[in-house]
Length: 288
Image (cartoon, rainbow, N blue to C red; front, side):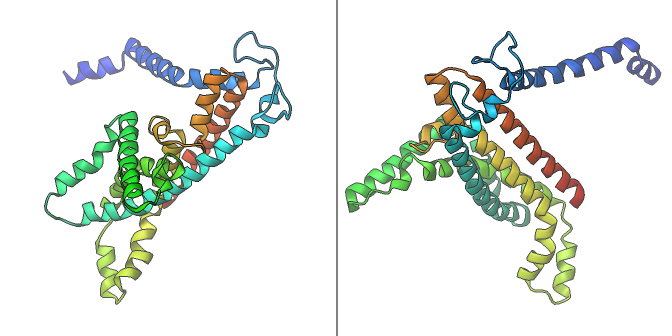
């Protein structure tokens, strides 16, 4: 039986089918990205065939009708908002979820399993439902404060603060899992040895435990930043006048239609996301 199984694995037909599947799978993943990227360099007003020639106008041209992304004030403002939101919510998520990781990995307490499930629940809730729920709750609280105290808490109204709160609600789950997975591999005997040598708990945390967690903290920040940057469903429900890039691109598509400048933005985002992902992988390998 074992010999037959080994022969099946070495069958030329099986090997061909396996390799063909792998090639088709990665082509399926890459083809839309390559197509979108190619039209960013097409010297045409529309992202479609026929090919009119190579150009960088959709990146750098300062005038209409081929206004490049680096001269489009609205797209640049959306990019700035996305970077601002992503940096804030990622930093908050990493800080909070470092505490979550220690809580769930190092401590036993009543209803621990129930609380863990509640923490994971936002991952399975549709983004639109999550956004609407947060918007309704925030509006109820803001209206109550306004009616009771005559004070309008603008940070509970649609805008960047509410987008940060909304994204934080589900990003905490992702970053908690990343950091907790790293913390579970930590040898607690290292902390005990440092304590026996006279180090205080804060010093042990700062010099032993956190340095071990740095790759996970960085990876969690990168993952949270990328998810925040590309998030659309939840953000759409909570956004105000200062729209992030995803909402700005959607609004451009609805009002103007598809233009190669959106393909140029996509190329820029693909390169940026790839660089961050590679940095995260490199840090994981360097730190072990």
